[in-house]
Length: 256
Image (spheres, rainbow, N blue to C red):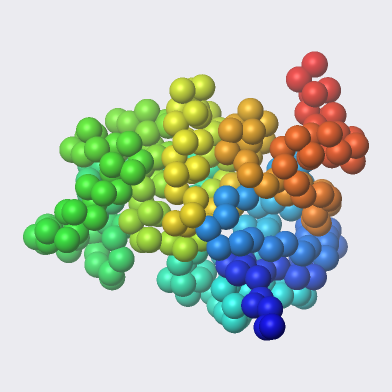
């Protein structure tokens, strides 16, 4: 009987990356299943953001393999090529078109090469309008369609930017600290949104808020000094002595 290979959407094996002699990523190996929601935690300087930079082509590894799907070598592609493959990234600080409406922000994000002028002043097709309505329903902004994006609350701007990524129908979403700066209510809603998106999209979330991690996490990866320290459920990770020493214990001391 033939055994099929694992259905990984992302494969990272033996990756190194140094900056001016500092090894930000050290022999990193990481696998993400198709449709999986993975949470990544770790102390500052653990290599979390550099890992996302490597996946998106913002920087290139010194050695190792980064593969999208079964045979696409991301290390040979630049940022826009990787984005067109279906890899979307959301940074911690939301980036939206503040002078345009919520509707226009999603319209501008739909696939297709158009200038802002062409997009805003050309006729919106029924298919485009249907897609925009679907995205705004998904991210909970259907009631804010004609509101200027700059007037939204912080959490709503985060949801709008997620909507802008979803408008491109990405296969893989990379989300950096989505709960930062949110109210408790906004944080819960964001967690619920990410959980709903999992399955249709593969998602990597970087986060420090352990309450939020517990809400969304199915599997947690802990990075330390540029490599994987351990992986498992939230409970397994929180009770791992190595994680307590290098990360959770430090966070507790910083609070005190």
